[in-house]
Image (cartoon, rainbow, N blue to C red; front, side, top):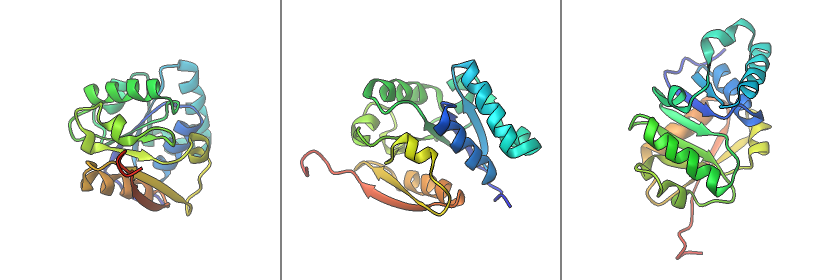
Amino acid sequence: MPVDCSQTVAIIGAGPLGRSLALGAARAGFRVLLEDVMPSTLHHAQEYIRKELGREALPAVEFVSTVEDAVRGADLAIDCVPDELESKLEILWLLDRMAPPQTVFATPTTQLSIADLAGCTYRPEKCIALAAEPAALANLTPGSAIRLRTSPVTAVETVELVSRFWRVMGFEVNVEQELSKDEC
């Protein structure tokens, strides 16, 4: 039975990772806004989620076509864009300008420094990395572990919010701080 959760989660990108996260978050009781700029990708995600959730999907997941609509009331925004510097910088720039000040950003990356990415926002303390390849994240099952990677300035509240999200979804959470360039 889903947990009643008051958090709103915006998921940016409705490809395999985005739709998998949206499905898991909806099943866990979160309010989910799933966004994709490609109407066909959003439509495929909508069909997939409705097939998996049945009529439950109607109130649990809202499908939107703009980042602004997705993040307007979000507590947590997770991007599902490619793990490439330009893509990550562009989406974090958009999120930073469109999301309310309290919104936390989580970005899947194994290649990029969360400190560097977060430093390009006005809220570096509200940025955290999901330390996994997108394909691996999309295939995780409840009970497995998720690694969160923080920067030296990541706020405790950010870690708590993102950890709670993953625990409610049934995952074990491991948190590690990224080494600074001086420590490498």
